[in-house]
Length: 201
Image 1 (cartoon, rainbow, N blue to C red):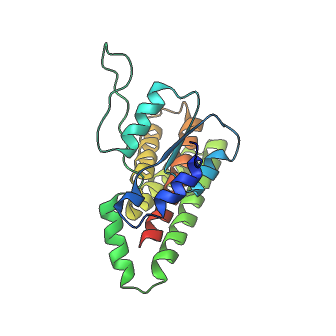
Image 2: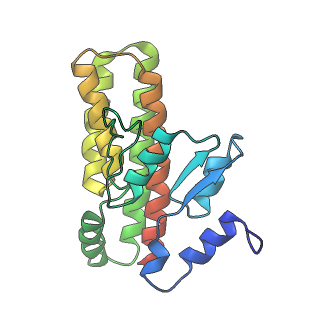
């Protein structure tokens, strides 16, 4: 990009006074350094992929941020990439913001901050429960996160928490660390997207 880098371009997009300001932006960078994802999300990007990007990851990301469903994997057998929800359900967000406007100019910001503090605490509890092997606490924390995220319209985060809850109920405990990484990533994505939506209000 000869004129500006990706973060500068994203800032310019988010400053547009039109619906285009909400265009999903996904970083694709060779930098896998610690903090790079947070810098991209802080610039207003919706998601982040570091090179080399696998086909499965690319398809998952397309499905996450578009209305279309793409197929990934080899043509034989039609291996489908999992379809995930948008970070924030816009219909739910419209309902929340409409209600918040009737509660005063500061209420929406307070609501978002309270929600973010809540989900950070719940994700932390999930992490601690995984470390200690406390499946009862883990299941309860996942169930609570699922409901809290759904109430705020954080669809992808709610869906991920529900999936983890189901795995625990079925006794499928392999890969809990990877599931936790995904929850933490989706929490950051939800935070970034909520910031964009709140700024647009």
